[in-house]
Length: 314
Ligand code: UDP
Image 1: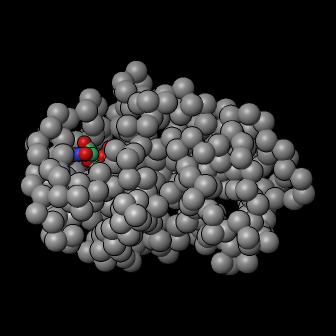
Image 2: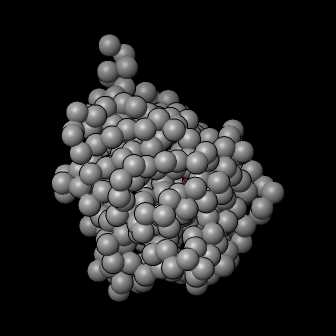
């Protein structure tokens, strides 16, 4: 099979490219490297099945030859970054989805949209099922991301209804693992970096807000299953184990053997209070559920960051 992966040099994208190549598929990776890194795909460049195109998906993209599937992952994905780049975020979700859906239509390819748990906003329903419509502030600092993904879901669904493009919509919940960017402000790289450097762990607010963390290999497995056999309606992908931010900080301190302490700082606006996926649909439709425990996933991630930091100091 021949796949296009947009955002292929990002955290999830690079793991996805790697998995598709290991299954002997051909992969075209498109990335504008705004928040992705060439370093994430450096080891794939010599693979004859792999092609990297440095391009912005918000501009029309041309691909020669056939395509079986498109994974549209290109997006600025961390709150710190989408607060800094709100226009690029909206453009990759809106124009980027339009361009890639047009390409899927022209090539007869199956289209998978990487959507997000952020479509639920600060949820009033808990845990979140796919049937929940969400509680989003369109003009808040998270609005650019949330609304770009909500628009992309609507656009993909319109292409399915009007043009019969086979679509998949993955609502991805917090995912972590190697290749997250150390300075993207997200909770896992930030806390691990602080723990390894022995700095204070910057807990936002009282730290009693919750998140549910999925290890990257589990998430990628869910994405490929969804591409192969999913329904056209949204499917939540994430790990239902819910933890407070304080608990996450304490686990990271313990697993990294750090002497860091918690430092309480201001909480950003519109930060969702709680988040946990109901994954019964993914279980039923895809036979999928996460397998990697938090202990195991965090241990692997901490050692990856440890190595990365030690290399940076050489
Ligand atoms: N958070 C925190 N300290 C940090 C970074 C994040 O307490 O240095 C909190 C943040 O307020 C949120 C949670 O961790 O409640 C997850 O934030 P992240 O940026 O990883 O992603 P989100 O789930 O909000 O999209």
